[in-house]
Image (cartoon, rainbow, N blue to C red; front, side, top):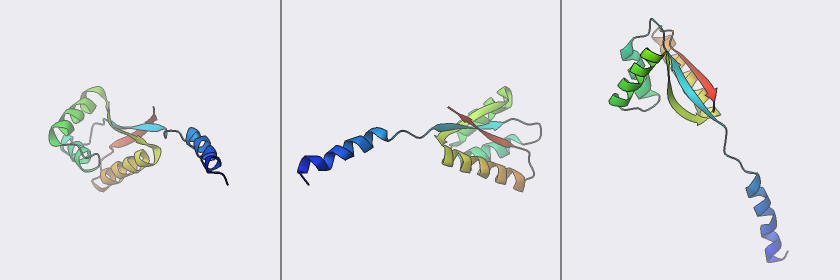
Length: 101
């Protein structure tokens, strides 16, 4: 095989690769989940520092929802499941939803 023929197909394959579709992970406010628990979730699952967690928790509290992060679908879904599991263990109704960008 000639040297140049080897790279012709490589260029074609690279052009077809696309960025994965990304999703927002959004926490929804409710009347029962404590603010302290929301901060804990933001720190443990989304790796936010305390100040960012506090500000985001207040945004969720005042606006009814807040974006915790933007990820490819698989990671976003895992994070949402982790939120639901952590909330269920503490018997809170905290919900996490995904929104396609």
